[in-house]
Length: 475
Image (cartoon, rainbow, N blue to C red):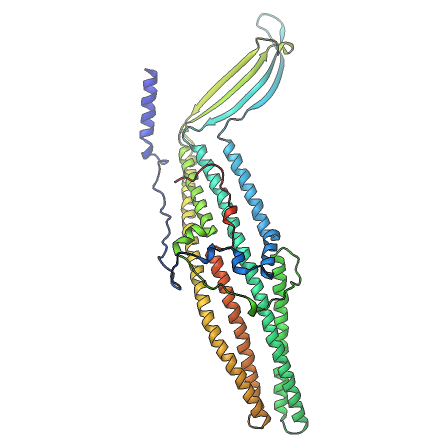
């Protein structure tokens, strides 16, 4: 009869779950909307991001710098320690699923007045194994907390992979920027020599009374402008070297290099794959998805906190009222103490905790969608940058060729007294600007490839990803 009443009471409690504030709510729809194809390129089955970074950047100077950064970069080293920290936190959370056993000994001696006699002395000694209060995970609350810790650990690992991909791209971009500045300096050096010769020629013509004073001052202004440009390029080069040195784990300083910008090679094909493949490829998206899964598990744990909890304590050992006879035969003892509790009044604490976890889940779902949108944006922009920079480069190739021919003709006309000195300076200035723009467009083409590679999720080692333990992912 008592057992039947207990079963009826339990059924009544469970049947009312859907009407309580801790009842299961419909999950937030976190599925992102992904386009079927890219705006800037046709979708392909393969993706540039699937290739190893060594295939993209080769085995020369850049590859050596990237290898050094992957070992010595401070941000990556911090990320590795955070993975170890998350692994330890997961182990701590998983240990709550199992009882704790402790070996202990205790001795107690006391004196108290007796009922019909004088004060009496008594003592008690114990020795054995004890199991402190252990919650039996009847509803799966502890398993949900363990799943949340596991997903957070995997999210931390994915974040480290995203950082690795970012470091590879940052080193490559910094290297290209440095080569761009080297090329700009070569252009400026050549222009400086050209304008120094022009200055000498105008000075000779002025001394001979052929050229006007205004021509001499224009030549000096043009020469000073080139020297100012060289100083600015040198400033930016030194700063770029310092940035790259710190990025690869060195102190700020010079970075040796022998490669020129025009010697860099671009991949023969730039396949972007399908937009949907980003969800599985980009580690930052995977990290956001893991974080969302962790919030779902936390919501389940907070919901199950409303359920009755059952805990168990126990002892197995020896007990004796005389310490000297503690290990004498017949002193064995054990105790098992199960306890059950059901929260009735908590002043709104459990409800508030549940709502807080649900709010965190909605935040994580929105962050996941935002991460996907940002990834799509980065790929689209990289495709546009690459396509438009190639068009700019082709146009600038034509411009530079035309400006060089124009300068040659103007110089001939100036020597023959047909063109003015102002026309000569204008031709030199136009060529200088066009050559600098050509270098920048070339650099932008390389940078766009690097940005596309990173945006597609390239640059991290998928084989090195931790699995988070033997548990499989929950569906």
